[in-house]
Length: 283
Image (cartoon, rainbow, N blue to C red):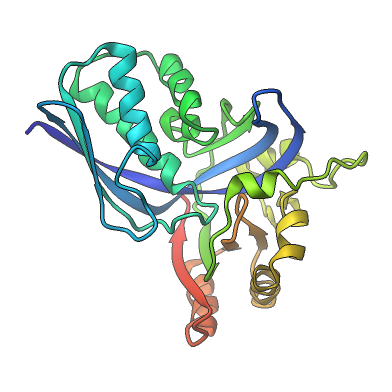
């Protein structure tokens, strides 16, 4: 079987403002996506017919409900592919954690099919196809490590940063589903304090970004889930440059200037079994 194996990276949102709800049920947002080293491994192969998916992770479906399956289905339909697609996913990114694992897996399937079947799809069309699958998928297809996203997150402008950021992820033991959180967002008349343009400039110039981090969804998630609120408060006590909820959560991340600082913070939380900890860095 001809196949291709790709790393599907997780993401964090350094900035996320939800502007309004659209008629297509999505929301217009303004966000800054950042890929991190934590990743799934996605193997995509050409098979005789159909679509098969194999993911040995509790809670992740091995059928049409998996977003990676939907990506393969879209590509087969759009380009009239007669052969089938076999997908194997080794999960490392926690499921329903605000880290974009499913979207990244789907993007890897799109990229792999483009290469395996020699479709030579232009980048712009790949992004448009990715948008059909989900709001975060275009970012993972784009190839950018860090980007300012508008629309539903599909209009992307690359942000280049030379120095890595060291990240500690703290994941409480629960799942939060994106749709539930977005449906509870209120749209106040006042604008948020931090500004995405200021943050993008700080990132590009390797400046301290802690005070510029922002996520409107914290206003929904933190009051509703005390353990997530506690996770953010705990991380804020240990010398981080900044602490923020990623996406719709429940993962909270802390940014450190050095790996040594991140390791020191991780070690403080090791004995508390309420959290899963991931030490990583930006790509």
